Image (cartoon, one colour):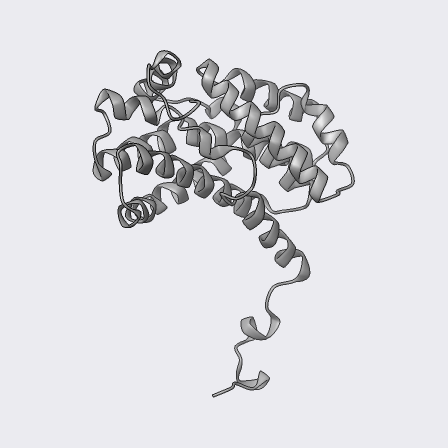
Length: 244
């Protein structure tokens, strides 16, 4: 049975504003696995962790990723995204450069540097080519030469007036999804187990985003030494499917 306009709730009648719809559309595109930044070719050290026996099944993959998310690169990258977004929104070039340079220096290994800088540059170039936006060139120039992935997402989102909170959650969802995809191919795991891990990490994504939104650069720090070692040791791993 069809519903008349009068029978719809106020939220259903009004729907999203044009700005909200545009922001959602762009986030779904930019942080989709099909957006060509090459994320599928990186594992962030998960490949070495599988070979070393740290990750052997769905439960151990879930625990490893939860630590990376809440106490490692996931949290740190979220802070950098937030700081870059706020600086770009305020057109504060000095703060934007500080965040971008610190984010580039914060990466613990050569391969992780390759991973995040390559994706960052690809994200900027493709988004800028497909979605013309006033002011984005000046924001990119203010960052300096090295623009890592979370800073790129923050800058582009700010340039398009995409609110910070949904950009943060979309970024973390994409990050975790790519880690799970790498783990699923390496362990290996089935699609159902992969989705169970993604579902179980939802509270961790929410709490990490909340912490990062309230954090300053002075709050940066990680406690995932084993994951950092994994990214370092992957550089000399004999058999590799991934670039990191």
